[in-house]
Image (cartoon, rainbow, N blue to C red):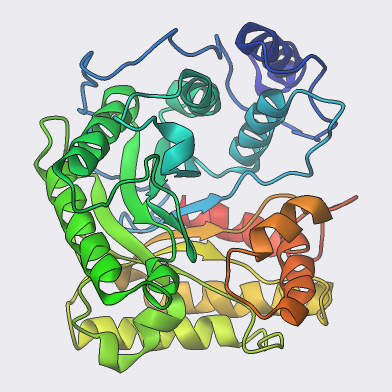
Length: 395
């Protein structure tokens, strides 16, 4: 089937998925997917896939058209939630839109308590939604970067009230990791534990912080030793880019696994950073890693707002600087995920802003910045061609 023909077929698929999961009724949002992605049955299995086993034999990383094998590029499938539409169908449609733009790696980051129950038992509706989002990438031999958010910035995100130090907590995480591998091992290229762990550590007690770091060490070790793990899957822990840029953190305990994972924050203290700050901080992080752990750098969120004191030209300048640096230092960068595809609703960004630990007066700035970091709003923004050009070069 030609990709243009699939543009209409995915609409029907997304609606069918929403009906099958019985969450909401409605049609998918009006997202222009242009050439479309791949399709097929988007419904996930009725229950847990753990124990069924993913084959995990998708081969080693390769490159297209002379692009470096070690760099993957992705775009977060963000979108403005439409209360009149089925939310899961919107998520599937956004994932297909990212694929149609040329990003063959899908970025997924989910709170652990949304993925699993207290024992690690999978929450079926959440996993079915993820299965539906991954299906087009699987059909196109694409990749998946998956982050299990043990914490969500300054908030805990584990699905139980007991301590992470308990053996039951580790067993629950092992079961969640089993689920990830069983469903997505053949597509998985990055497995992350996060999210922005250093923000949580900054407010946690010493014992809570120690428990989290021990827990993350066990989780990373289990994932790397898993029977379905392959050499193409890089495992690590997500912190802020600020944390990695600080030379004092060259041997920080969160530098576990195969790569250092960073999230860029465009806000400083009560103000927006300059567009050049992204490339500057990434360069500093790369220098710190080279002088410390030697791990490659995976960038899970890179992006810049077009409002909140900024504009579309500044956003484009940010991405021009970013991809110039990626080209210069690509041998030490394993993954770059742009945040994100579409602008979002203020209500969603307001809820998210509360997790960052900003002063109450700064949360509106945070929310406005987060909500304008998409590459598209009512139309494509000025930075869109820059990102498309990078996707053509590095995918």
